[in-house]
Length: 432
Ligand SMILES: O=C(O)CCC(=O)C(=O)O
Ligand SMILES: [Fe+2]
Image (tube, rainbow, N blue to C red; front, side, top):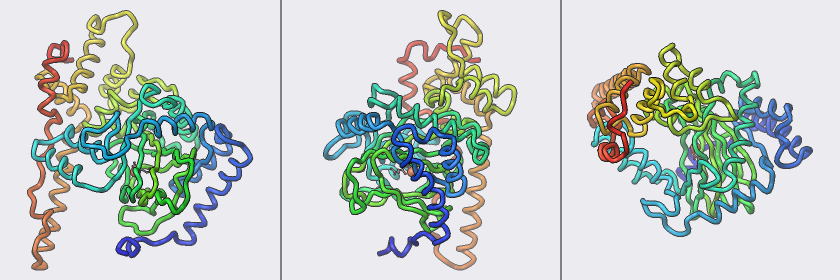
């Protein structure tokens, strides 16, 4: 009841706009058959138009049917059955647990990380379990799936309507397979990257549910911008081989409605390399984990993300593969690349050389200065709010009583120290 009071159905003009974009896509799909129909230039243009004006688009029959089958079999065959503990099961972790791992590895002091951890573990915001796949060894079909979605995103990046929005969107995260276990499991309303700090630009989700009825719930509900909006635009059924694309930004608040059946999907996030340079956490993912998409050159795309000559030099160096046959320590460039990679892989902790690398990168990309500015703005906003409550003679709500969190100095968890000592050469790499 409370929920119904907070949500409004699509406004007629919005419903008409959405339908105006989705109907032609459905018609072209019906004419083109599964798997490759979206490769036609007309489809890519329609999809770009839908993203530009409706902020999302839906492509049914996206993969060749055998590939969609293979992915579905992989998920249904490996998903954990029954309760999943905090430690996970067969490589699957609880949605909340994945967040907890992130909280442990995140920046800030122990107190701050503990608080984030507690919030992640207590927060019932999402009820799914997840498996991150970097290739067919994790879940068969991952490589072909990524190649297909990359190809579409690559083509969308050349459409004038949205080319600007996809500038520097050259990287992607690991594919995240999810299963909501039924029993009204859901994911409450959120945006994937509202603060524009983690790099995510475009969210791609492929659904893997062979039998799905509206009464099973689990629809993806897309709201009008912003997070404050109570007006939704569309409910999308999580149907087999249906691909949904939407902006990861504040423009697309969304939720997974309570699901009464097991519900499987796989998500890939496409990231803007330039945005990833802005914070330590996003930089670490970009430098060592993110996949460069659609056969683009990692070195070229990293270099293009930099603003200054020194940023561009370092980014190219990081993106270049080691020269074949040559040991990295044989050249100054190889030594520098290995030093930065080792520092990132050790989370900038473990030894003095890694911490010095962090200081240098923070200066080069402005991480601490930006974090301090964000902190200053948050404190100022809080001060103003507190003043307002005091002026009105109202008691302060809890968040306004809490002291402002400190500016993160390093994200090195205590474990990194030990890891660094144990890994070969970890403490001995030269600093550039
Ligand atoms: O599975 C879905 O439909 C959406 C999931 C989602 O919003 C997310 O993982 O961020
Ligand atoms: Fe999401």
